Amino acid sequence: MLLWTDSTWTACGVSEGDGVLVALSGGADSVALALELLGLQRDGKILRLEAAHLHHGIRGSEADRDAAFVTELCRSLGLPLHTERIDVPRIAKETGVSLELAARNARYAFLERVAADRNLDCIAIGHHRDDQAETLLLHLLRGSGTDGLAGMRFRSGRLIRPLLNTPKEEILAYLEARGQSFCTDATNFETDATRNRIRLQVIPALESVNPAIGRTLAETAAHIAEDADYLNALKEDAQRRCGTNRRALSGLPRPIRLRVLRDLLPYRDFTHADLERLDALLSGQTGDTATLKNGVVAWLDADDLRIGIPENAPYEAPVPRAGSVRLPHGTLTVETVERAAIPCGGSDAYIDADRLTGSVTARSLQSGDRFTPLGMRGTKLLSDYLTDRKVPRFLRTMPILCDEQGVVWVAGYTVDERMRVRADSKHILHYHYEED
Image: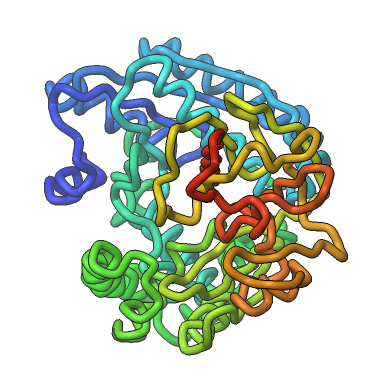
């Protein structure tokens, strides 16, 4: 008796030469999954099968019972087993995340590590159709877009979910028919976790309206997944065409544009408000900014949308007459040359070395810095100079090269007039700054 169809197995993308690691908690879903995979191994549909069990250090004697059950089950089946114990409550406390999330992260990290160590091609986990229905409702309550409402996939990276179209009642009937015992996690019947409340309270209420709500929600997730896959294919094409060009991004249809902007964010726990701020910023002017979560800031330069975390901590470092020096935001290289390559890009500067006074340092911008921009007369506040060029305050991380008289070069922008290379300059230094 197979718990899934050939088309489901095809969707999991497993070939006859693959090795599979089954996540075996001892619960009904994972036990049924392991038994079915063993059958596929005997039939030559997969090459190798091994199991993995993680003791989370949460449920005391009940967790010890599960570990002992899994060990005995694998012994009786001749199934190689890999186990590990971890203190999830300690990890949750140290990282400031919920116990549920800490356990999930630890579990998947463990499975990925075992699969890599054992050179196994995929990791089979026991998510079934009822889990898919719960996932759709959970994401709906959180305000997810189509990618979230698409729920879980048959294959996500190395993870496969062969039971995703199988209802829980069929899994239980399968085990009963085989006379196979399994463990029951008592915490599944507690209503502290949101998913448990959905399973124990929301789903039964919906079944009073639609007895087939589990199948209906799973089918809905499948339909949404088709739409999401199509939109994401359009998104990938748009990413190749537009990059971070602000005008090209502005011209995209909004559903595609928001997907592209989402992928530009340096974090995955974004909110709809983050995307709306980015979208509104695209219609702004050069120098406009938007503050996002996690200390991230977005801004517009002349051509592109930029996103990053500002780092303006003060620093100062000596600059050699030759060689390289590592600075907080990049690397400065110095060399002596025979002539200046003018004009040059903003990352390069040529100066008359004979006009340097004393040692040279690279430092952060300081209040009151003044200099005479190349080609000008009289001094100007460096902060005013940068404001005129619409450089946001948080982005003023460029190194300022100074000697004992003052500013020599504002990296990325201009040198001081007194350092200009003239026709009679005998010793010329070339500065090159490579930003991280």
